[in-house]
Amino acid sequence: MFAYVILHYKTLDITIKCISHLLKISPVANIVIVDNGSCDSSGEKLQEKYSNKPNIKVIISKINLGFARGNNLGYHYIKKNVKAEYIVVMNNDVIISQPDFEISIKNYLTTHKLDICGPDIITSEDKHQNPLMTETFTTIRLIKKMLIDCVRLFCLKVGIFSKKILTSYSENSKTYHKQQVNLKNIENCILHGSCVIFTGKWLENEEFAFLPVTFLYAEEMILFDYCQQKKYKSGICPDAKVLHLGGKSTQPNLNEKDKQIFKTRMLLKSSWKWLKLRFFPYNKK
Image (cartoon, rainbow, N blue to C red; front, side, top):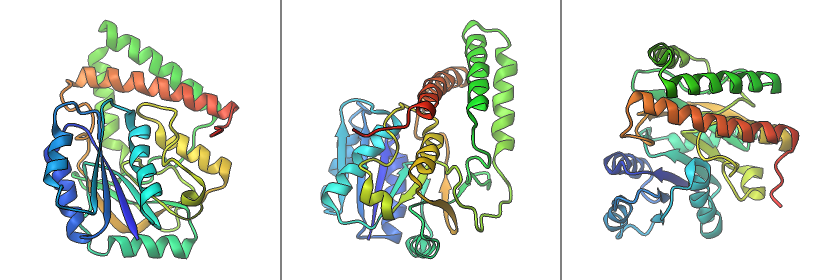
């Protein structure tokens, strides 16, 4: 049995579109929508809209818990109340319309004996987002990245080289994802966080989907490090495809400069947490 966690924040029409497509391919799947502190009544509107759907649960958080803790709220609810063999944790701007999506995921995970996987995530520009990264961050590389981010954040805040930095971000974003990608036999890689499927030993042992140590950004890298530490196996299912609208689920009302300041600040905080985990592995107790 599949169950889905969908993280919602303010963009009501995007979430409804996501649910609508999901119900077409899996009408009786258990779906948990987590309203992550929207404070605009959109959570209540979702509750009202799906009040006649016993398989859909809307959880409203009065505060924004961030990406990891928001998703974990839904994951924990499913673990406690639903007997699911597979839990799909996804952004509200991810569209699943492939009729055999669940069959493809199940076959892939069973055949390869994995605990976590991601689908082939395709953007509106027909680019592929999985794997998020092909190379893992060494500690030295992580420290260098943090120093560069500190300089970028300072320049953006004081207005030095802002245009050049924003152009660099834009160019990197355009070229980062792949036009063509061969996903066969890609295992133990960093998965894109917009859609991750958990099963097997992970569901047996873990009370969270993402490590609850960050507010936003770098969750995928931290998840990868944790999988390596705990010897969980991950991979990418090439036969399961989803559409990621991208940029619709967080900070929808900020201009480009403010978005990059927010993102860089959050990345620095997350990277610091990630660095600490390198030296002091996460202990749930």
